[in-house]
Length: 60
Image 1 (cartoon, rainbow, N blue to C red):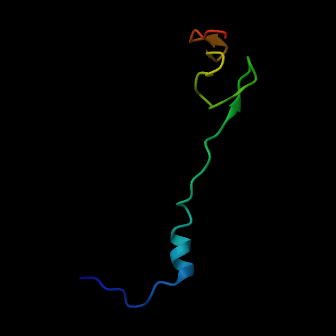
Image 2 (image 1 turned 45 degrees about the horizontal axis):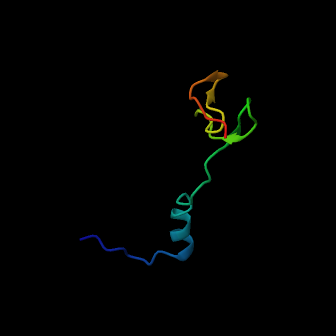
Image 3 (image 1 turned 60 degrees about the vertical axis):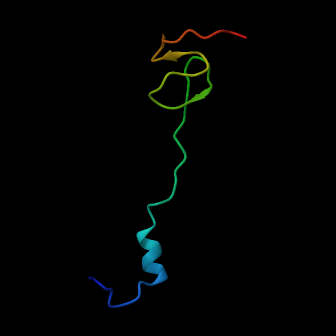
């Protein structure tokens, strides 16, 4: 069984975990209604994608 010869320092342990943080999802602006949306997805507000209406949305 493998056993480490030396103790792993706090600095080395934290450097190994440096990429484990969470990132916020990216957002862009819809060119039709100017509301925030995720890139490469249909706008949930107006239902358009690349200038074409994909989903029918009901105006309240």
